[in-house]
Length: 141
Image (cartoon, rainbow, N blue to C red; front, side):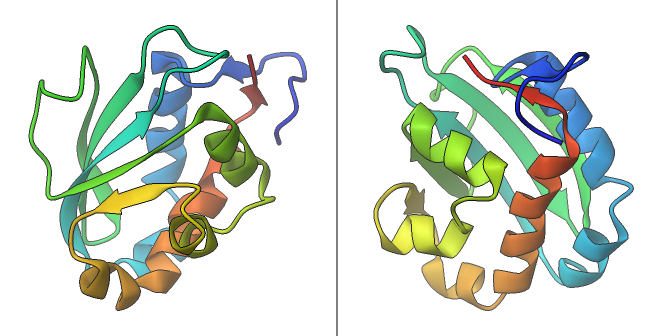
C-alpha cells in the first residue's frame, strides 16, 4: 500500500509513524514473531536532498507490541538500546519492500547500533517489523 495514492501519509511524518504503530499493534504476525523481544529503538532518517532535518522516531517494542512511541526533536532527546539509521532512500527502499532489513544492515545501507546477536536471534521479528511498513499508505518526498 505504498506509492503515493490518495490518503497517503508523508514519510517520515508524525502521522506516518502513528499509523505504523497502529498497524503494528494489531499485526498478529509481528506479535507472534516478536513475543520474546524486549528493546527500544531510535529509527533515524538522515538528512540529505530529501530532508533538511533528520527525522528521529523512538519506539519501545515489547513482546510483539509497541508500548510507547514519539517523534523526537533530535537524536539526543532520548536514549535507546538500539539505533537504526540511514539515508532517506534506504528507508524508502525498505518501506517499498525492495530491501530486507538484515540485508540493509549487512550491506551498510542502514547502520545498526546495539547488540547484533540479539537482533540475529529475532530476525523474523525484524522482517515482520519491516513488512508492517507496507501496511501504511505512504507518500514519499
